[in-house]
Image (cartoon, rainbow, N blue to C red):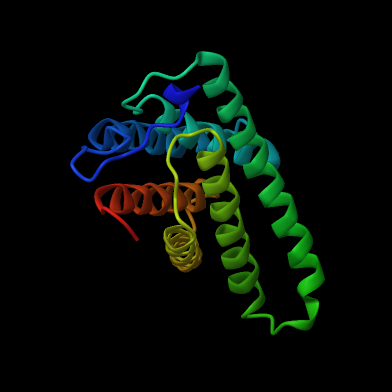
Amino acid sequence: MSNDRPKRSQGSPGHILYPRHFLVLAAFSASVAAITRLHLSTDLSASFALYGALHATALVVALRARRSIWRMCLFIAMAAALSAITLRAGIFAGQLSGALARNFAPYAVLGLSAAAGAVAYGILIRLFGIYELSLNSLTVVAIGCMLATWTALITLAHIHSLGTEWFAIFWWHASSGGLWYFDRRPHF
């Protein structure tokens, strides 16, 4: 089990092969954007579960240390479920947010959902021994994911041809960018 939780000394190069990880994320981003145009699925929960599974897969294929296949498959499945649950929780929160100003509600609900999803995903990443984000770094990654989600929402308001995958793509890169940043720093 010690092989499942690698510790990083200050001189080690990090837990994840980031060039590979971001290359896989770019390929997934292009694929999801192309597939979304085919309108194969209208089920948002299934789409967001796929988005969660794809990001987790991009992490798994870029890990430096070998991990057991069953644990990494379980990680991917749990990331997919977490993504779908976060979407459903966000939709529920949106229905409850009727008291908020109409223009503010989507930003508040989407931002908080993105941040909560990032925190839950960061905890999942830690539980599976992929990377041990500190509370401070997890907070910064969550804020980055919130800002990325707001950026996606603003972009979607002006470019109507983009779809829900835009939220996932922005969130993926904010989350992974945070991991990359903190994996390079000795302590935070």
